[in-house]
Length: 525
Image (tube, rainbow, N blue to C red):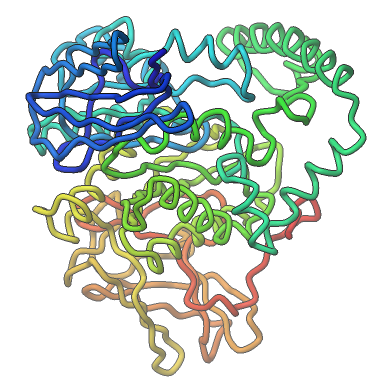
């Protein structure tokens, strides 16, 4: 018996210039792995084995041969290049075929600069998962396969490949609607006190749960929700003025995400076990991560949650320096809800991670969101800005001014005015998106998205003017400004950008400024 994880297959991309991890299961004996005239062997221990091939330069196609006695496995058409894991929820999962320009990309698909492995999406370990793994494999860039690839992942890989001149492989490991807690082990989650609610809420649900009744309820949910999704999808595609309320009147209430329990994709730690653990520690260049929407009901603890996830993944890949590129959430507002102002805390947590943790990057895509659509369809800017972050932080060769828009650096006050300084912004590079004019950037009709407050921490909209790499703020309602914040809202028009077209990143000048999430429906832990 000789077996490797499903992520090893024909057409796979292996990471260049690093030791290449290869592992699996086998009957007793000596396992040898050969690649590109290089052979490494190891002894099987308790039915398992692991070894590392020495670093290889980019190239291929190659063949990998794995042997143990008479058992032999061959993998063909292997390319050595760059490999990135694309994690997160639905906006990373969002398929190329549904994205802006995706149909043309798919129709004209050719070449071999991008390959993709989609980690089987099964929420629990069992026969369904094992069967899905048997049917999974790396795919090449062709019209049949690439339509279901992550659109953000594809654009990142395509642009990175063209910059580096090597094939880029993307490992899709994501699931729509999932909390970051789904991708972290119980051991890591329970070590952080402020994250205990994720485990406690789940444990309270399942402690007296009848397994047979739960499975029956889950199976009924799958049948019902599949029919609902089919009907609702057709309705939203064909109705003149579709609304969610009318959809539920026509087809019944959506039951998403279904009953919580040990087979739910939304349970804490679940997808860590059934997806992430099935591919670790496949050798990669780093992680791409687009997530946070699902945790916006607990925004005050998202920084600790995201930090714990980064620590977990780096620990599992046995590399504390492994690059981690985060997508900062864009604008979004559900028309059925008030602006709870909870997304600013998620964006802030994502920026805090970048500021505090080494070998991280942040792709600011503030203007890329859509009103009443949590899944903006244009993913090319997302991939583009992730690529720029990777080029700056990992591969070199570009400046910070190319990779970033303006990011808050510091502030000072003179009289009734506050001066905001930015990093990654040379003098005279801040401009409004529409006319690129210098000087006053607001009027009574033009909201600036800047606010200032005095010692009482009561914020008022600020008038603003650009002066070189600074913005000057003032308000008739604030005589002595002490605090400032920019774009402290879920959704509004984005008008202030850097010269490279990347927007100014949201910020506040102090964590102690009195900002809080509004609305009783938001649970803060």
